[in-house]
Length: 241
Image (cartoon, rainbow, N blue to C red; front, side):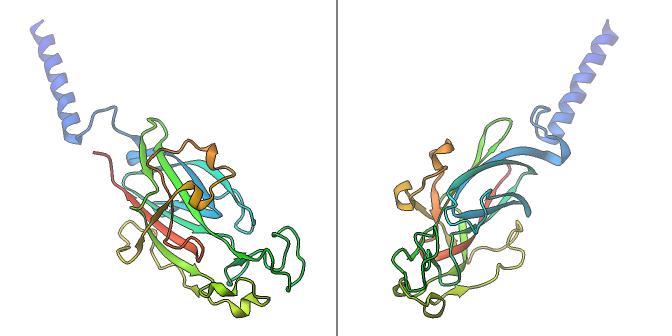
């Protein structure tokens, strides 16, 4: 009996030591180097690509060439903390002029170059939330804490909106994405803080209400939802304590 009790005590001590050495309980451990399953929901006007730790995990199900790409998407991915969330968002534009519905009837069919009644400057918007799939724990939502870098801005002279030669008359700014921008250690201190918007300010619709958004999730863009067309976003999610 004494020997059996000694073995039980020794076994309990070994189990405690193993747990203490890892700093977490057996239930809290995750396989495959700490990887977990996550679920992300996104609504974007008009299009997005979503990267986690440098890997593409999701893309808008509606092509960027679609004029009215107002839809939400939900997908899953597997990754380990910390998470580096990197997103490309694009508002729809027909060309570098930054305009939409050029010479057409509300984008439905072409009319002529001189028909500029529906020709206009569009606007963008983006919202996302990430949860742990198994626990449902919310780990990230879009907010003013996200950092953005504008790659394409047009028209720089908005008075060209009704031009019959928008590619000639409208000025634009365009740069390539910087190398390594999706890396965790990339220095984004020169990027701008996101600006938060209301549903009415963005005009969020067609798929937006299909998602049960957490109250902390905000629609974001830069300070100019009309002129800034293509934006890179970054947000870091530390490992849970």
